[in-house]
Image (cartoon, rainbow, N blue to C red; front, side, top):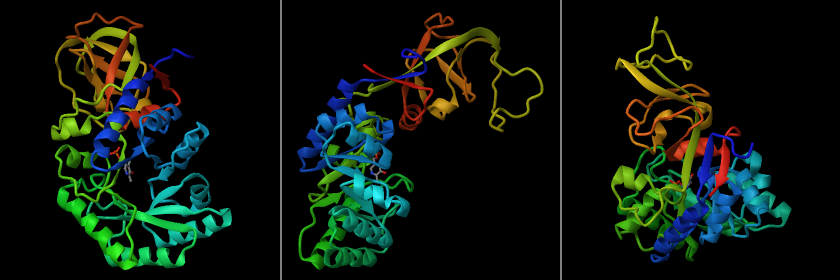
Amino acid sequence: MENRYPRVEINLAHLQHNVSRIVERCGSYGIQVAGVIKGATGHPEVAKAFDRGGAAFIASSRLEQIEDAINAGIEKPMMLIRIPMLSEVKDVIRLADISLNSEFEVIKALNEEAKRQGKLHKVILMADLGDLREGFWDKKEMIDVAEYIENKMINIQLVGVGTNLGCYGSISPTADKLQELVDLAEAIEERLGRELEYISGGATSSLMRIWDKDIPKRINMLRIGEGILLARDLDVFYGYDMSELYQDVFRLKAEVIEVKTKPSYPVGTIAIDAFGHTPEYVDRGMRKRALLAMGKVDYGDPSELLPLEEGIEILGASSDHTIVDIEDAARDFKVGDVMSFDICYATIVYLTNCRNVNIAFV
Ligand SMILES: *Cc1c(COP(=O)(O)O)cnc(C)c1O
């Protein structure tokens, strides 16, 4: 089954280059990089490339991935970046050195468990600055919790504050927003009478502030996934020059299982497709099309697949099939040929998580 398709090829050298470049760029502003491995389902080889490239922390939303990274021999501090479930507190303490938190009850449970395991667990308190995913909304509550941790919790060490932007509410990490986080950190510092070690100013989208050279001075940690794995979003959506990074770390390859010329408009009474929808079909007459042996089960959304060759158009997909128009393709595709795609972040998450998909390193 070694050479089977569909296959995702991961270029580890290019990945490591991207990690190093981001670590360098951030480093020149005194910013440490938490390398977020969840985009590639925390594959140990990917985690190792983040480690070799110089990420200060290995970060994931999932404890299973953190455990895999530890078992792969990575010795960097492990960071859990999703607010812990109460039901996983024991494993959080066992596996993660540091976690992002927004619930007092959870932090109390972490403290109890850390005491049981004889550990000191670090926490970063998350502030919600308007993106409306995780984080304290009430700043007074956040400052009070910080003070409580500082004075009453023996096995929890408050190491900083953080925020997440551009995930649910599409809020941009403007210099003003990040300054708001710094101001909040300083309010906490005033209450505690000491400096916080980290101000964690967001994810890939915050790299815009580095590229624009206007990141507030005290931001000293970013948690970067997409900007290292793909380096696409800032380029495609915001027009930033990401040319110092490789955008070809991931390649998807699928095998052609049928090539035929067929009508472009379905023949018969149109009802619903396999997913209960009625898509629009355009009648372009008879067209040559190829059927690929991969489908939504493998990658999620076919519109996020980007054919690497000219003249190929993705028409649609069902669970296990992808239908592409090849009428205008430069290559004369035959059954058994392999078609290559560039992929988006969401696609990589699915592909690397799917047991039907072969992961290969090049
Ligand atoms: C996923 C995630 C990140 C990384 O996001 P990218 O956009 O991939 O860089 C950072 N922080 C948190 C809390 C996350 O959930």
